[in-house]
Amino acid sequence: GENVEQHPSTLSVQEGDSAVIKCTYSDSASNYFPWYKQELGKGPQLIIDIRSNVGEKKDQRIAVTLNKTAKHFSLHITETQPEDSAVYFCAARLYNFNKFYFGSGTKLNVKP
Amino acid sequence: DTEVTQTPKHLVMGMTNKKSLKCEQHMGHRAMYWYKQKAKKPPELMFVYSYEKLSINESVPSRFSPECPNSSLLNLHLHALQPEDSALYLCASSQDSSGNYGYTFGSGTRLTVV
Image 1: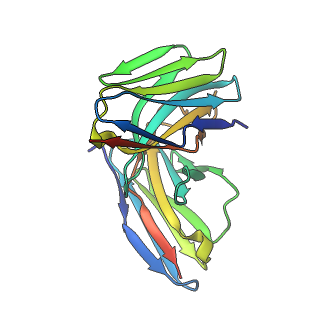
Image 2: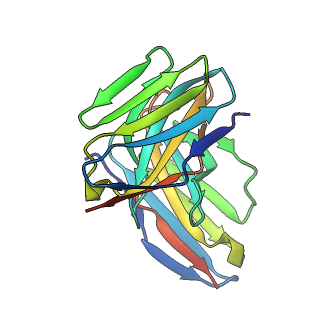
């Protein structure tokens, strides 16, 4: 199966700074990589995703990059705000298999 | 409607009780999922329903019994649970079961087994 590693486990930044969360995956057959944000007491919310035929995708302050050769992908949040504070999970899906393998999560704390 | 609704939000049950968790979506999604999430851990897949048929069971103990009465509803029947089954139970849906789409998760049911 797939193995997804996520770093760091906790990240503390000052409001307005950028935050970067990195994930690596093991199976080169993985081709879809979503990112989820989970606030306290809520379910995970899809915030951005990227497919293996794309190297980068951006949505306002959030961007994701994918390096297929190195088998890693990253979430970039610019101009962080206190409401960005949450746990973020990366995930990977093997081609033609409806199961996501989640990373262990990153707790992001944005200090005002 | 872009939500997955789960009820109840909180549930406390004894080890001899029978209870059910409910999940509903009206987005026309044809795949629905049950996940279990322990504190400070990622969600773990339990069951996948595709077009109202069970397609994946991740070797879940039989004390958890899923049911999909129609394309909008998903239930999880609980019986004779153990304290270690206490967790957040998340329902999710996706457009189809191809895995090409991200999930929409509900807010979960916080289950405590006493």
